[in-house]
Image 1 (tube, rainbow, N blue to C red):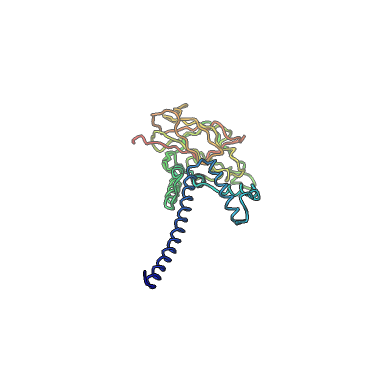
Image 2 (image 1 turned 90 degrees about the vertical axis):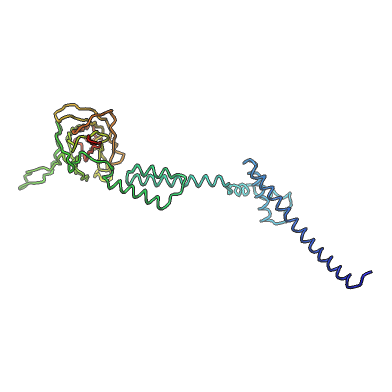
Length: 334
């Protein structure tokens, strides 16, 4: 037998325990649902792609049914949902691996476009390699600044970064044009009472001068010509450069008068008829306006006299224009 107060207190404690038990059961039910979801997600990660697509389609179907119809549909009412709608929704999902692959492809495409643009503007091979080396990695503002600075530095170094031993202001000179005949225009530069006294024509010296502007070239008659150049010093030739104006600056928008096939020889003296062949080359009219060619023939001799033999042009029937020709190499004392 207990008194009334003790019985009421005991009854209150039992009520509180029952309420707490209800909360505990609710938490247990929530944890069980979370565990089922985690197990389903784990099974999805280890599911083949074909089965994964089917599971995604089933999940989409259930979510769309719940979103549109709520609890008004039964399991037998799935046919109400259009199959085309389910297919379209499933195609909007993308896996993480596919997303990473798409981002990498986009980044590589952007880097390639940057590389092509820089190469067109400056013709810098070092810039091309630097940009391609960064494929797949983020390019920072500092790295872009370094690449642009390097391209501008190369452009300021006469666009090649190589010493030109044929340059007239550096000590080079024209020794002979052999049998080549300078092409003279019929536009009189000086006339008296309508009688032409002097016709203008560029000297072969234009070939070894840095001024490359439309018309500032040595034009010789026909498609074959010869030019003998004395270099500023004796060198072991390593490369030559042929430069012409670009098509965009040509009045006719073509380079028909540009040299096409040409050969380079090393001579011991200017009277030597046939020297040491250093290489046969072709100037590409669709390429860059400045094209450098390495010495293709095996050679260990040093020369101070170089002969250029132009063998053909790109189709002009009357004359061929040479704008600038450069000779690169290593001085004999070095």
